Amino acid sequence: MAQIRAALEQADADLVAALDARARAVRGYVALRERDPEGYHVLPNAAEVLTRVRELRREFPENGLEPVVREVLGVCAAMIAPVQVAVLGPEAGLTHLAARRWFGSQAEVRAMANVTDVFAEIDRGRAAHAVVPFETSTDGALSATLSCLVETHAKVIGEVSAVNAWHLWSRTGNAGDVEKIYGAATTIAACERTLKAEFPRATLLDVRSGVVAAQLALEDHGAAALGSELLGELGTTLRIGSERPAPMRTERGSERPVADTLRLVRKHVEDDPGATTRFVVLGQQQPRRTGADRTMIVLALSEDPGSLYAALQPFAERGINLTRLESRPARSSAWRLVFFVELDGHGSDRAVLTAIDEVKARARHLKVLGSYPRP
Image (cartoon, rainbow, N blue to C red):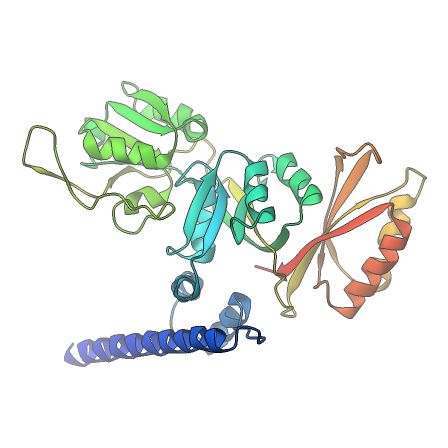
């Protein structure tokens, strides 16, 4: 046991030393940019770092490696400049959870009311990045997101998936104390049958967001908050914009302190267990190719027989695998349908580039929505 403890202490010391070394390198990068603001200075992107650390990993569990590395990268990015991310609300919902997994806990997340507002934040330069739901395992692709991808300049730079998991939290963690359940309207709708079956005497009350639900639950012994796993971290690491909840409060009419974290009452109270949502990460800077990439395009074709077959033929001729093909009604009156295509490869790969050029010549309209490393 003494040897194990010594090994753990040494590993912790080595870990802190490595983190300090990375912080020094980041500060050096900041200083270099200040000295040479016109120079071309590019750090390794997240995909390159993740590929490298996966190659170096030997003992650390593989499924825990990416969250740790992304958190470190997020802290380092915040050392360079604030990382501002727009997400589709509500606060502390699944989209916020997806953004946190991608950018880490240091990102300044702004929850927006609708998808159009999220894309506007990118187009107007008010946020460097955004995260929006792209498709669900139950309903398929989301039309609002697809339409905004066609009509705006934002690029898809990554994707992340999350299970649609909702949990119930309270101050005490005791199911018998629950008399009221607060949650965002969409969250309550996703869990209503289960909540009514398991908590038949509880009143379901919709509020603006999971954050509001958590604040109400922290102040009321008989209340519970419905939300994602982020609610369990309220008061410690949850970050909405630049604000953090107060670390400790005093209960009304008493000097007894109120707990600053929520305790889990019940896990997985969603009505449709196992449902997942695929989110896309948006930005303006296209990631460099990694050799294991995905490209999204949208095209509009004539209505002549065989036009779709002819348009996609250049991909088949070059051995490019198409992983998704979906048609949607077009908002523009210039054409009736648009086709969303996903394919293996990066837009800068020679085969993909030449194929897209040939398809563009056969289509009425073609737009590359983005290329990024495959998850």
